[in-house]
Image 1 (spheres, rainbow, N blue to C red):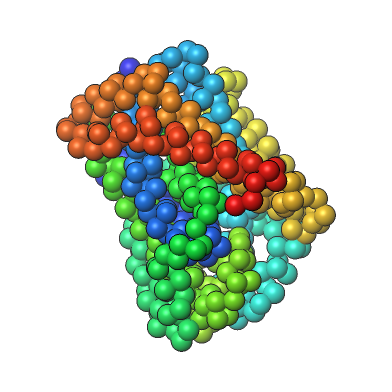
Image 2: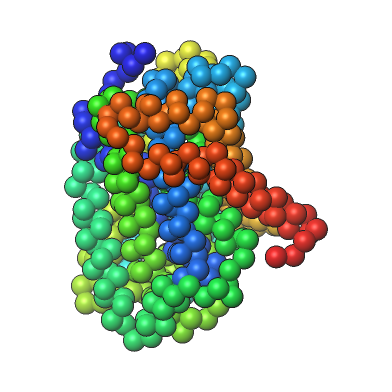
Length: 451
Ligand code: PHE
């Protein structure tokens, strides 16, 4: 079944490509602000537990599904059971929702990179700089167009291979840089309180929303519940170990998210004394805090340039995998050529992304269930559709095709050591937890209960 698909050359190729998709803005921009907002240590702990249980089982399951069938999401579900192709369709909606607003944030990163390169670093460190920027209409739109334009160009020319090479050296440098910044931040006066807020779980901050946010973040960060890992699995050779690959991708992904938190959260404390308002800054947190760190450092401008350049590249490898997925879904359906399909996807993403981009400025008055466009798209994909897809995937693997079918697939390349964990997670724990959490959050959203 697998013969016509190009495949990754080996394990390193596979792990790096999957990590290139997984490591992105989710780790560096999204994780720290969620951790700050949802109680610090307790969020981190919840996230880590979910990562080695849920995250592991789902990622192994998705990759095995892809490798077994040699097909992408829609085809994979259909091939194993016709009635369940709808899960593949549902999963396919997610990258379509994420790509446009992901590119808006990618645009913000370019703006900061340019600001640092052109000598505006000191200005970027001023409070009010970020808000002043995103509340404009034209500028954020322009940078958004630049980011998605570059993504589209790479996908259209099909030169992802070159990009893969870039991610080979990008990852280690990114880790090194975040480490340096995190250590510098840890030495700042006032940072200690931030470190303990981030590392010490305080159970009084725990709530169902903590778990929901952590779960949504986990899916997002590991590129799960949207068919991407199924597609990656379909390119994987049969003799490459699935289990150890998943562990490596997880270590990369969670490690970088953890370090990003170590860099941003203590810095918030150092600059604002842990003021809850500063911690709840949401999507702007990284952009507001890090320029202040760089401004306080000798040679910080250069570090800032290097940092935003790497974040840009990490975001680019992720947005490429998002767009690639969307393009291939439409290509399969419409039977159009690659270029034409790319242009269609680009057009759609430009339209939808513009809403997100203008949601803090011109369209400030327009809110969907109380949220600006970008926050709404983020919420609907991460907290609603992805948990539903993850739930259905568990049911599909656990009860329709049965875990054994995938365990056999994993065992084609060696022993599956965590197969008991895999089975129990997929059949019982994950679906029950996802359902409970979703139920609670819907009830809370409707105002029926207060948690
Ligand atoms: N996982 C990526 C990140 O953390 C985001 C992403 C989601 C990329 C889905 C591709 C697909 O930034």
